[in-house]
Every structure is written in C-alpha cells, then in structure tokens.
Image: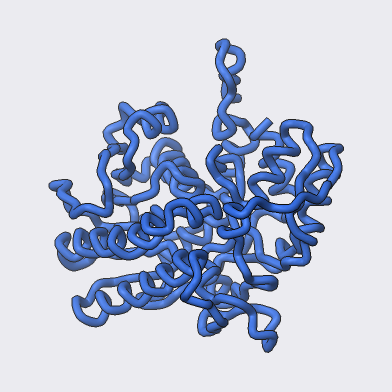
Length: 360
C-alpha cells in the first residue's frame, strides 16, 4: 500500500492514489514484447503531460518490478514541475530529465533507440490563446525531434502522437472513422491550427520515412482522461471532472449532442505501447474503444451521477467558443490496433470512477 501524502501533512497527488498505481501495474503486466525495450534508451517529449507521465510511470514500474532496464530520457520546459512529478524516480539511473524547448534544435549528446513526440497544446484554451505555439510544436517541434532521431542512426523507431482531430468533421457517410477517413476542416479559422498541424505533422513523418528511411509509427489518440489530468486542461470532460470532484454542478456549455470517442489514460498508454512495439512501420493506428463512445450530455450525466451533483447549462465565453471543436460526431474504428492484440482494460464507468477517486 502506498502511504497517502496527506498522512505526511501534504496534499495527496492523484498519481499517488492506489487505484491509479493499480491501473499502471495492470498495463505494465500486459503480455507485450518488453524485451524490445530491455537495455534500450527511450526519449520522449511531453513527459509531464497526461499521457507522457502515465507512460513514464508504466515503464518505470516495469523497470522496478521486472528489471526491464529501459533508460527513460524525459524532455520538458520546467525542471521544477518535472522534479515534483517524477520525484520517486529522480535519483534512478534509469530516469533522466532534460530541460529544453523542442521548438529549438535539440543537442542532448545521447543516442536513443526510441523517440516519441508527445508534446502538444491539447486543450481549447491553448488553441485560442496560443495558436502559433500550438502549430509550431506540432510542426517545428516535431521536425526537431525527427532530425534528432535521424541523427541517432539506423535501428531507431519514432512515434508521433497524433489525434482524432485529423479526421475533421464527419461527412455523414460513416459511423466510425478508420485510418483512411478524411473529413472536412475549414483551414481559415483559428481553431483549425491544431488539426491542420497534426495532419501536417503526419505528412512530415511520412516524408522522413520515405526520404531518410526512418521507422515511424503514428498513434492517433482520442479524447483521453485520467488521474494524470493537468490542472490547466480546459477540455469539457476535464472541467466536468474538476467540478464534480469539488462537489459542484457540472456546467455544460452546449446542448451536449457531440458524440465522441473517449479513452482512459491507462488504455491510451497500453495502445501506444502496442503500436510502438508491434505496429507496422509507416502506419497510423486509432486508439479507441466503442464501448467508451458517448454523447457529451450523457457523459456529463454519468459523472454527475457518480458524484451526486447535477448538470446545468451555461453559454460559453467568446474565448472558450473559439477553442471548441466544430465536429459533432467523431468516433474511431480501432480494428487495426486490435489486430495487434490490443484490447481495453477499463470500461467507461470504471475509468470515470478511478479518475474521480484519484482526483479527490
């Protein structure tokens, strides 16, 4: 049992909650070809983010419990934030943090075997207030990571964390988006910066694969959540969870008809690991589970039901509205990922309960 930080006179962090630790252990125990990571070096940007931090926890769990001996080099802008988040690994010879801005050329002086670009602005307020940074991290930052990977020589695998937003708006011709689907995006809007830069990022990865022979895989994440949720995250689901945990009513700033795929962070990380270790070079893979597809209003009601609160409606501000996705139906087909042996470990209700209990 992990000792509660509250017992030491401190606020308990969600990622120290026993339920989250249990979920990480479940992913670390999956029957994957972990030997591909044994004795290797894995470099990742966005290490303190929702998915990146859970990936670090999973790999370090495997290092500690199973002697994986995989060295993790975590990149980020804030050493202070990283030290706080990864304090339990800070003195481990298998964990290194490097403070840097990935929008500048990287000079790390090490050879990696796996490079993962997970850094990105990923929520509406960032899209609206930092549109340039959103685009540049997805293109220039990716370019710097790709160049670094190319300099590491042959035998390296690169993963670019893409998004369900590359599909754009549903044309009304399918229920589920497979990896070849392409919907409409109006590029002449502020909100287009995120999906268009993700599309461009995928094209850049394919260009490096063809021109330089780089081994690239592209996990496409859908709307993800979990105990590693960042306090700054302004996605609707994130706001729902914070309101509910605080015992407040859940504020729905639309009619809630949007029908989306959602993924618990532990399942997102297990999907990423399947793609990284088993995926076919050059392919993109959707990480989603249809049992977690739900309308926004039903999602709000489910969270309110768990926490004993209510759902209320409120008009969004102009800044909030500028960052909202225009897609009303975005459900992903995960058949290609399931063919690699992936299946989710958590249903939506369990995932919400674990998240809410940890955030409390």
